[in-house]
Image: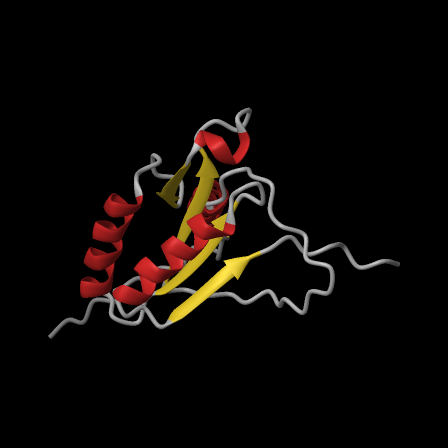
Length: 152
C-alpha cells in the first residue's frame, strides 16, 4: 500500500473587506435623509399661539396624527375661513377630516391627535375640531402652542 502525502494549503492572510461596511453606511445615510424629510413635512409653517405662562412639555408620541388648522386666505385674517390638513396632506374641510380620523381610529384604536392651529384663527374653529375628535372617542388630544426659548 502506498500512501501519498497530501499537500497542506496555507490559508491566505486575513484581510479586511470594507464593502459591507460601505453598504451599511450608504443605507443609513439614505434612511436618515428620508426620516428627516418626512418629519419636517408634518409641520406646516404657521404662527402658533404664544401663551404667557406655559407649562408645556415636549412629549414624543409614536402612534399619532397631526391636524394642522390654517387660514384659507392669511391676508383676510379670520374672515378668510379655515381649512384643516392631516400632516402635510392637502387642506380639507372639517367633514373630510372627520371621515379620515374615523378611518384611522378604526385601524388604530389608541390613536393620539395633536392639533396645530394658527394663532389668528378664532377659538370657535379649533373648538369645533376638538368636538369632532371627541365624537370619534379619541381620548388623547394635545394642542400645540409656541413655547418661548429659555432665557440664558
